[in-house]
Amino acid sequence: MESIGAANIGTHYDERSPIADELRDGQVHMWYWYDEQDEATLTEAVRRITRKVTDTLGLRSGERLLDAGCGPGETGVFLARRYGARVTGITLSAYEIERANERAASNGMEELARFQYGDYMELPFPDGSFDAVLALESLQNAPDPVRVFAEFFRVLRPGGRIAFSDFSLESSAEPKRLATFMSALKLPRLPTLREWLEYAGDAGFEVEEYTQCGPRVFGRRSKYVKAAMSRRQELLAKFGEEALGEFASRHLGFFAPRRDQVGYVIVAARKPRG
Image 1 (tube, rainbow, N blue to C red):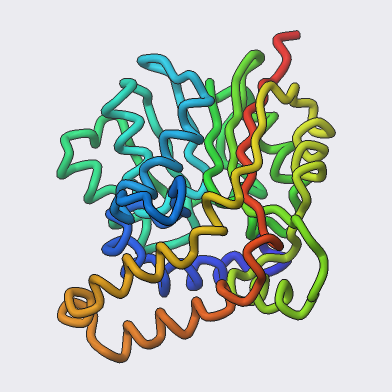
Image 2 (image 1 turned 30 degrees about the horizontal axis):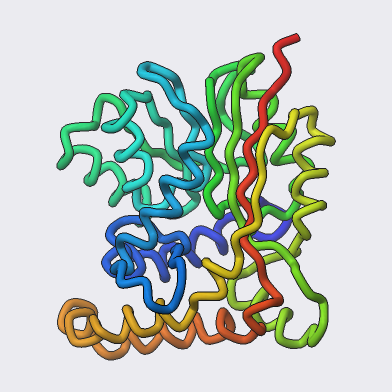
């Protein structure tokens, strides 16, 4: 990711992941609530996204999974434990690498789930190294999605699968709101669902399933705020006023768009067998 600064992206996640890790129990991605009356906790809502995205992979015991943008490791550990998959997680964040390996060890999964520094723009793996690739909200920071999808295609074996999820553009009205959102999350672009599907298809993947569930994800921001505020004193005690204030200020732009402007897409695809 040198064109926008791999080090800067790594720092971005070094700064935001410790509190997000604590708040969302090791998974720094989005949530899923059915409606405003849904009483699921934030951790439960985040785990719904984990299951909703990863279930589309159809993982089997012993399969090799690349978790591209692995976060603090909870998703990779979960997949190793649930399916017996051999997980290799990559991230640009030093904090996430350390925390993910600690999490794997504490869960007795260190033989199945391993985490290392890696840039998905230039993956350090031979052709056909993996049976499946997961990119759970990690493509949003890619300076060149065409190159990233080409790399995913290369490291998958014939017949291998990919599942990815990320934000999508649903309305280009009020562009200043969108620009603020993109700046806060360091997004070089905000593709539509159609554009996400084209990235996958142009790389050679056969798209098998997709959905847009933004109203239950980005559209439930108020549920996230309420859940986060309920743990404010706990987070203050652990991280302090200054760190919590910086975390909050870095996320202000996330709330800038209208609820209907930003969607959330989940896509499952396969590399042809021949």
